[in-house]
Image (tube, rainbow, N blue to C red):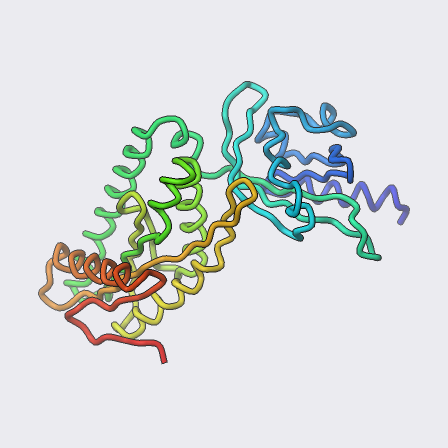
Length: 293
């Protein structure tokens, strides 16, 4: 197979990706721009290849400057301006490219839409609307899960999760960084869920997970796993890496207990985790506590 055929094959494969994907040379000129990148930005490959990015898309590579140029991987939430002038929020990850001798030869950027950020960045009322929808959905799921528990069909456990840095990030970096951090945290936590579990926003910087672990000990163990997983979140805001930790309260439903009581126990356990300094799990009173061995 010739080099030209191989290049065409690789480009065809990259065009099938479900995320935007771009490759840049050492001078940050566009070397490749896939179909999803066209869909997300409105800019066709023929407009960009061989040229620097237009100002509307510079945010894709803007954080990669100074020391960050030598980082093998870098990610964060950025805002682009679509060719139709609409603001588009994306989660972008840059990857430094090196040849077989370790010399820099360019970089690749993958990016995808960040759910909810486009609206949240402009109007706090949209945040409240999103929270209302998320909470309404969760309440409906909770009622169904509680009914199954009462019938003896399934176990029910709750994990009430608070992002420890949420309010601080909102105060120091603003609404866009705050909502970006929550979105990244939710994505990371979702990676650790079992197939029959569900996560959703409950309060402004809090999540609720509906779980079906068989015992309180298994639920607590699951919570400790998620605390560790949250610490792996690579959230960056314009070049600055911001650590993410969570405080979790876990509560296993008890026979004869009302849903409001279960929620109250989970919330108080989460608050105890926050008072303990964060990055912590507290088992709710009313069941056997489980501590890591």
